[in-house]
Image 1: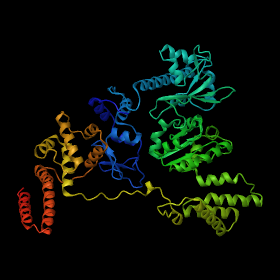
Image 2: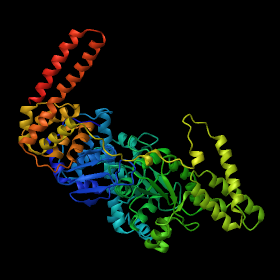
Image 3: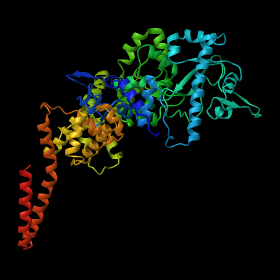
Amino acid sequence: MAYGKIPDSVIEAVLKHHDIVETVGKYVHLSKHGKYMKGLCPFHSEKTPSFTVTPEKGIFYCYGCGKGGNAIKFIEEIEEYSFPEAVRLLAEEAGIPYTWSGAQEGASVEGNAERDKLIQAHELAAKLYHYLLMNTTYGQPALQYLRSRGVTDKQIDQFVIGYAPPEWDTLARFLEKREFSSALMEKGGLLIGKQDKSGYIDRFRDRVMFPIWNRDGKVIALAGRMLGEGQPKYLNSPETMLFNKSRNLYNFHQARPAMRKSRRVVLFEGYMDVIKAWSAGVSNGVASMGTALTDDHASFLQRNVEEAVICYDGDNAGQAAALKTIPILEKAGLRVQVAILPKGMDPDEYIEEHGAQAFMRETIEHPVSATKFKLLYAKKNHILLEEEGQKNYLLEAVRIIAVLDSPTEREFYLKELSREFDMSLDSLKQDCFAQRQQLQKMKPQRDNNDNSWNNGRNENRENRRTSSAPPILPAYQVAERKLLAQMLLDADVANTVHQKLGEAFNVEDHAALAAYLYAYYAQGHDPDISRFIASLQDDRLERTAASIMMMDDEIPFNEHLLTEYVNEIVKVPKLREIEEKKETMVRAERSGDMLKAAQIASEIIALERQLKGR
């Protein structure tokens, strides 16, 4: 989205309120290294920390991928927001009033107004249902039901659980009094039009209600669980302009900070599992809503985590769903593990019976690998007391193991089979090799001569990325960067450079930064790196500015050094001109035009004298 100009006062207040370390620390585990804070970059895969935060300057920078900027920029990158969206989010969190003009991009003003109205209605509906649950006789049976399931009042408040009474039009009348369009409320899934077109009735009646939030924490849909007998047991809002069940995940907005920090997500099947697991300490748990996990869900998760733990019900249906979910997550590039629950139990029941500590210790903290889960699942389908059952299981197990790219992993599982069934490891390896040959024949041929079959590795490209040593820059580029660093810290230095050099920097981005900085100080701003970066609103320049400010310079800056830097910068065009003239002179000599060559040589000598005379 894009908005009109955001007032400077709003940006300044947002940056003043949101400390860079606290903002980044919600997503990245940071450790103190002298005057810096360091951690693993959340924007690319790395094993050695190259992500650096400088508290005194209010900026972050990654030496691995080059991303950098202030607290607003970090939220832009981590949440995939536009600049105005990031400012709006941070302003809301800080309770800072924000108003700015301009229509949103990508949708009509009318469409935006409808979306805003529907979100407002959903927020009110969630509050109404929560109030009815906690404060009325209507809600007592639902409240007793929740407490009998081990849900505390704190959890009810945390997840804004509510109750929709059995009357046909409780919400319809509530929204009508507040002048919401009933037709729009039907479009948004809160109401249903009567068949005789005489009015509207509530979609949800006599149900325990669970609000569904978007990534910003705004209610965009509702889910209701029936209290008594009847179908459907769970009823979700329909697909609307706000809600798409194939893309939204329950509790994502609350789980995302923990997911980002641990790089891990725990997947549950139902709302109650997420809620009960939260109380057990699983703050990175989410659930799909009335649908199996989709490719969109997996892609969405992959942008936030590296590992997924599936914690579905222990019954046959839950385990079958887990088996189907594994390849979807692996296709998205996630490492997958499975938390095993006793047969027939779901996470909610396990916590209720064995307690929160046991749930964390026995399931969440000790999941099995996806391969181990597949082997366990396959084992249930064979009668292992019979010789034929053992043989068929071993052949299926070898097929499961054969798809693994790592020779070490293959041997590990084959050895387990060998020990468990007293089988020759060599014979199992031979069967595995035959399976891999068969798989290779079925694979489409690649043009890039991929040799992962022979070397047993098919590493993710992102994991192969290494942070190479920074290139050695020419002297004039170092001078420009050091000069800009001082200009960002001192308005007087910037003014002196403006008089001596203007915008005659040789690197395009450096010239642009200088121009923006002159204008920034001309508007009466004091030196403030974070605020200046916010004024740029250009990804490349923001990264360049952050990179420049991460430089360490042990040499004290003074007027003599400033003059040296300026001289180094201004001589570059003359050096380039000399090089060009030398090339022209050589061409003249080769063509036999010695007079022209002599004239050019004279010009070169004059230019070189000018350089020495500076």
